[in-house]
Image (cartoon, rainbow, N blue to C red):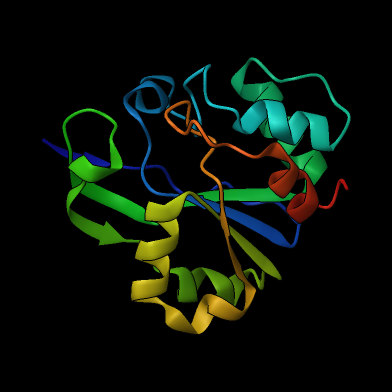
Length: 154
C-alpha cells in the first residue's frame, strides 16, 4: 500500500531528528512517534525536565520548548505494517532543500535505517549527522544516555 509520511515539524532550534518512516500508530495519530511504547517523547521530556507529553498539542509544545525539529528520511513509500524492513520504493526527503531554509547544526538519525538511508542519499551531511539508537520499542539495546548527551542534557 502506498503511504505518505508527514511534513516536517520545524522549530527555531539547531537540532533536526529524522526517523525512517511513521509507524502505523503514528499514522493513526497523524504525528510523529505516536506509539505510546516508543521512547522518544519520554527521553525528550527527561532531557528538558518536563512532564511527558500525551496530547498532540503537548508534544508540539515540547518540541518548540526544546527547539527540536522532526522529519522522516522517507516521505512516501509502499509499506504494510511498521517495520523498516518493509519499506519499499521509498521517496526520500529533500534534506538539502530543507537545510537551505533551516540551517540545522546537528541531525540526529533515529535508528540505523534512518541513518543508512540518509547517508546513502546525502553523504555530504555526514559531518553533522549522528546515528542514534532507535527509540522504537523493538530496539532491545536502547541507550538513553546517548540521546541525553546529543540533545544536550548531559
